[in-house]
Length: 98
Image (tube, rainbow, N blue to C red; front, top):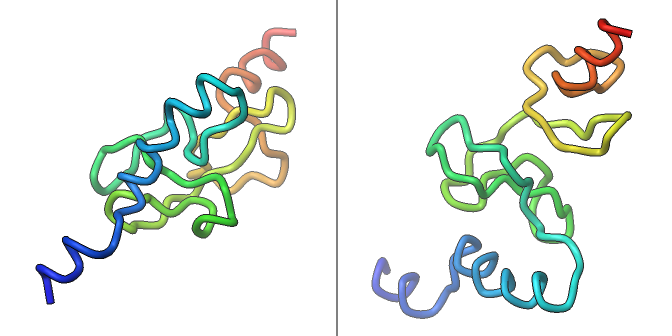
């Protein structure tokens, strides 16, 4: 069974790597959040494309991560607090200092 899976089913991580060149060359967005690492495996493969997997799912290990998109700047971040207003730490600091 392990051999069958290894030989016949492409991993999601391999899929993301296979499209990286095309996205850089032709433009577009990667299906993973940039700069956010999985809490379980510490890899940068957290899905943000719900056509590929549930948003927040690590495409390397399958763990679910609570992430959100910042309402101000559009960057994804770990949403540990579950705040009603979704702001990344940088944007929270911006509003505090304003």
